[in-house]
Length: 85
Image (tube, rainbow, N blue to C red):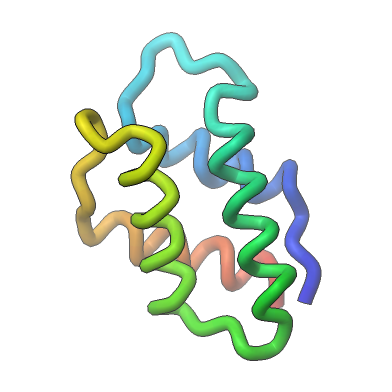
């Protein structure tokens, strides 16, 4: 399983978890890199819940005061998983 950086960036930008307006195209580039790296490391062992947890972890680390975990993260993880399959 290989992750596509730009398509994942599109999904994350659409989600815009920190609600930045206007949103620069590359605002979440570092976070997307961490997510892509995680997906590529997991290869065929990637699970939806593990991906959700990693997304939460990345955004908590980078934006701890501004990011609140929600059920939306699971839907974002699902979109990314569908993209990578």
